[in-house]
Length: 416
Image (cartoon, rainbow, N blue to C red; front, side, top):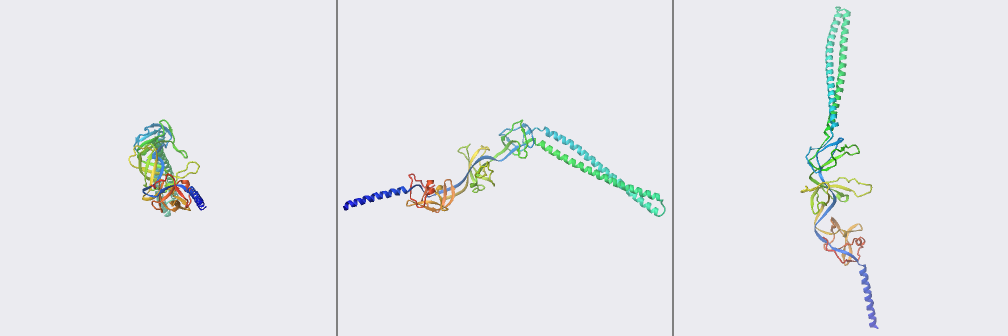
């Protein structure tokens, strides 16, 4: 009996042990495990897409309306500053200049006549004033003689009348000078207006010639000879004839998400690649960071973006404005730092940390994070060589403290 009893007990123990071990294996969660290691150089980048643009360019429009009677360039032509590129029909402008010149000549003649009238009136005033002085002296002598009884009363009355007449002539001549001066001022004002009009129509005539404001290349030509062009008015843009670009210096103009723009600094180094030139890259530096977000197109809410310009360095002669590009801007760099896969860092109770595998258990360990380089993040607070859970993401999202874990069949190598 005792031997049979011992066999039964042994069988029960074996079955129970097998059952316990099977349950334990079922409870363990399969996870990806990596070893915390050091990275020789960890770099953080901001990536953005955009297009190549000229550092200096000018969109040429028209300041007058008319028919394009001469087009002297083609797209791709190199031009110099001040070169005449096109001409708009100048007939109306030339007619206005001739008419204004004739009208101004007449106004200047009127102003000259008004000046002569002023001078004649001023001469009359001088003559009348001289006569008044003589009349006043004669009146004074007549009064003295009349007081001495040596002059008849009729002669005294005649002297008084002569003096009054001379005074009236002075007043009349002075009033004539005022009228002449007023007429001269009016004529002078009309001459000034005529000269201003001559300047205006002369400017309109000059604007019938479209000249290059900068030296460069015609990178866009939107008109043909014989077309009508119009000038811009309020809320309605005018005709854009062409674009002149200085291709000696080019920018990569990209749109950076608002989450990344504050990480950028002026003069950050960058690498620019183009779809049109596979396998080739250009170096550059951040030359301009937008101070405000770009306008949003459409009514649907979307993430804000900021315009950033990267000045390209080296030989850019083969590039053209409008080519699409991708840009990597270096924003931070660390040497010889501990790093783990980005997805290995999780949040628990408001703290960032990783799950360190200890005795087949996941133990949450808080860490301090640093820069992010691609899919790797700098950390401190965990030992080099420690084994941590790096995935799968769905498992990490719900993994509990102290959970039993086991490595998957393809356990990852140490973090690089």
